[in-house]
Image (spheres, rainbow, N blue to C red):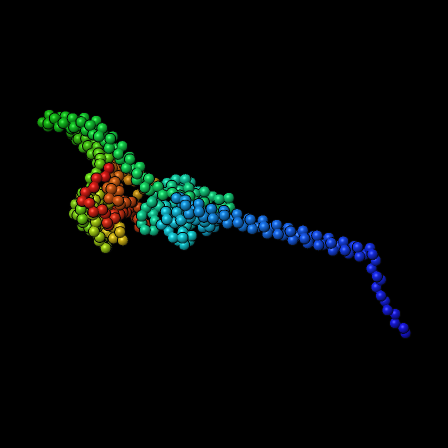
Length: 386
């Protein structure tokens, strides 16, 4: 049996041309792809550079913003914040990232909820115990999270209060002449009428009416006097004392009003106008005794670094939440016959000493008023504050 070898036919000229054209087309496609890839690389590098510049600009803007900014996702996780937010809220970055969703204002309203209050003033208590007034705006983001922007307007509010008191001073001077003069005349004629009728046979009702006129005149005198005290320029005669000593003297002044306990933890020296601060504490104690209706009032003194805290706690019904933000405004009172000037005057005394006065409801019931004073005031013996 013979073996026959099979050989492939020689490629034709046409096949070689087609193969060459295919290789040429492939080389052109490869070259085009290489060029396109290099163009994409260049564009990607340009985009990266632009993103880096944008991010750098954004970080610069966030760092220089005087307002705080916090952005969170739909689950409440903070995705963006800035240094001002941490400084205003008194939180470090880790605490802000972990706990922003749980923050609330002094009324218990959540800060991160975009539907809680919109744009409004919110009072916030920081971890160090200080209270700040913030202009707060919180809105939903397109992705379902929230964007909160807020500014610290505490000092602006204090400046506005000082300007308001300056205007009140002018009004008070006019009020003194326009109300007190006819009021004194009324009291004088009332005294004459009471003497004329002393021996007359008048009804018991008529005598009660006369007594009510006198009571009304006394109340009006107190309102005018309180208004003048609130509006007039104050002189603070500073002297060295201690928080514990101030509290003990205030307790002596209200002795007999009701049971009271005093706890002093870490007493600290102060330089204050003792007469004004003592009267402030007396006002708080009077209010606490009235609210407690015979139950014990508790007074606490505690030094915390450069700050001294004096708190007065009552056993009353507490303060209505809607009244808390306005409690220290003039003519706002929780009492049926109160003038609403005592707490406004007390807060002004606290402000003049560089301190704060705030009110809050205790979780176990009743109200707490907290006076915080700096433990190291300026060394001059007297300063004048308008």
